[in-house]
Length: 293
Image (tube, rainbow, N blue to C red; front, top):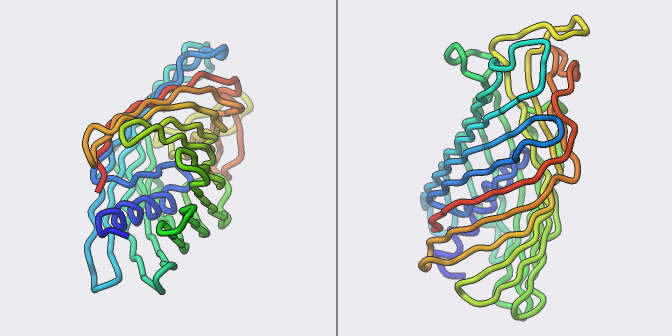
């Protein structure tokens, strides 16, 4: 594999592993992305801006160390009547620092370890101890591009301290180009199909599992008498999108789709749901610009 392509795929897999709970596969030096879910029947709209930067460093002839930073700014727009002040969690912030080591075992297999300090908070009153969590991921990937039907396989385990369910979760990613213009992806949290029209135009379907978990610095009491200390959301999303190659490593893209299910809830100190904000489906739009390695 060319050096440039190897780095690009390496960063892609590191971010896939490190961002398992926040769905961010980013084989990029730079990415700027905007996502929105327009107001649905629950009178809730949601948007997100994503900023990503990654830098790989060569450790020796075969291994690499990677430093990556990702910022997600989340915005809630709730027009429904609520028994508390929703401005407390109108703006959420998630900041990840990905520190990864990639060890080349042989020509096909590489092993990866990722440590991700994360800040996930409303940040209403500066940085607090509960805003900070540490996520750890280990995995391996096999890349075979010089065969008749190129394939990529990723297997891993992620422990994410900033989610409601604190247990190790599996990561699976398998991509295969089975015809000249077609390839498919099977895995968790993403599956889909790609149609490579030519070097400039790519069409893709996606099935995505997405979500977040964020600390509320200003806790408050909900109608059942318990105190909400965190907000979380999860969704399954089906999309169809297009990517345009501006130059060799510069791309613009846009996706549109709909959630198959979603929920946004408030949680108490024990991480149990104590108030449902949204369990209605929504339309989904995502667009962005990226510069690959």
